[in-house]
Length: 306
Ligand SMILES: NC(=O)c1ccc[n+]([C@@H]2O[C@H](COP(=O)([O-])OP(=O)(O)OC[C@H]3O[C@@H](n4cnc5c(N)ncnc54)[C@H](OP(=O)(O)O)[C@@H]3O)[C@@H](O)[C@H]2O)c1
Image (cartoon, rainbow, N blue to C red; front, top):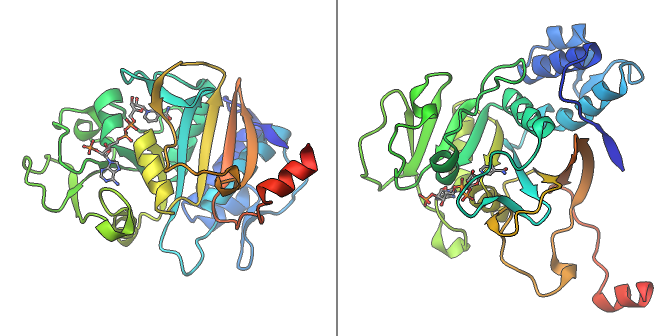
């Protein structure tokens, strides 16, 4: 089922829906209520009149409400990830060119996710290649805190997000890293590595999320690249993964999701999903919190379909 076409530009119905979502994300219940979005103690943010609004506003609401719903009391944070990839699974060319794999509607979607997030997280590879700003300049809404995972402090500090002062920026490095002094005007988070027995690689991402949560940054958006999103996925921190697929074939390039392989397709991750159209791209949103339905055995599947 395609949930709707998420439009690029803001028509009036979209404007009101977006303002309601922004208010709810900021915890401003009075303002959200003026746009028809009310906070219910049991069910979270709900539209007072489910039948009002246009189709574009409904698609916007369906896509973004799960990100801004109140956290479960036992949860310290919520993490959504996103990748924009080619039909053949690349997020960039081998040389690192990713401008742009997906189209304008998906880029606007990224800005919307940033506006609703408390923090937007990227890996050092993305900053080195793209020199991104990670601001919300294409949509109304606040900038999120920018978080760069750079374990060995290899980024020189000349990148725009370390320089522009547009919003707070955190540089996350390995606690033992002595490479270079802290960057002026940029916060530094020193992090431990994952326990080597856990099988996970690199910096302890749960510790990162907890440190961000302690600073009041609980709605976290991992925007790339493939290595960073895959590491969050592998350690089970992603609540949802959005993969926007563009009708382009790169041939060979930097991979999107990369996980240890499985021998049988019955062992593959096959989470519940939703689908949204974004211009000529298709966004798949995978819900990684739902228990997968019991997989058929291979023999059962073959008996059913052959
Ligand atoms: N299409 C898209 O959606 C999209 C989005 C973003 C970026 N991109 C493109 O993707 C490319 C970059 O992606 P990428 O996958 O190569 O790199 P990346 O994910 O941006 O960065 C990977 C690097 O970040 C650091 N890192 C991330 N998580 C870590 C952890 N848990 N522990 C320790 N270090 C961690 C490591 O730095 P070290 O290497 O220093 O160890 C790692 O090699 C660029 O070409 C960019 O243009 C595409």
